[in-house]
Amino acid sequence: MKKLITLATGLLMASFSAFSQETIKDTKAPKDEIYHYVEQMPEPGFDLAQFLQKNVRYPQVALDSSIEGRVVIKFIINEDGHISDPVVSKGVHPSLDAEGIRVVKAMPKWKPGVSNGKPVKVYYVVPIKFTLK
Image 1 (spheres, one colour):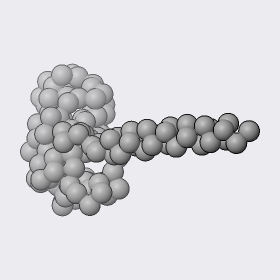
Image 2 (cartoon, one colour):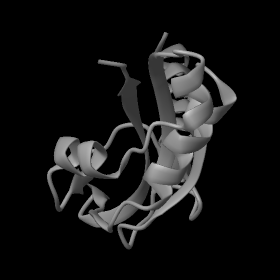
Image 3 (tube, one colour):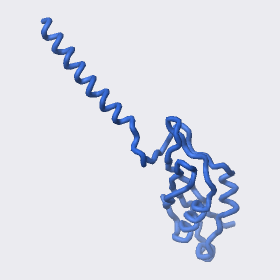
Image 4 (cartoon, one colour):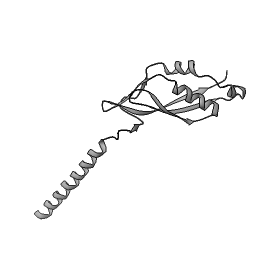
């Protein structure tokens, strides 16, 4: 009986050791990892709604065709706060989609997201609503 307990304890220690080594490996994030959510999310250093209101120009093609809708732009806020890689996540019309991309690219620098005390790349999504009055 004593040998059986010793053997079980040895197996338990071996499996715990292997598990703890895997856990340590998994906590090291790849250098180019892009997060969806972090402890401290990125923040614009400006009023985002006001920026969009001032800078969005309704495309003439969309005006002529009375096209309205909400364009959703997904982009990355880099470790230094700059915007990169904007893409249309939900589009309405090519002209409105292109305007959404243009405005996001024109945004000033943001306060970057932070994970484990370090600035990291974070995905961010901004909806831009195009409505005719």
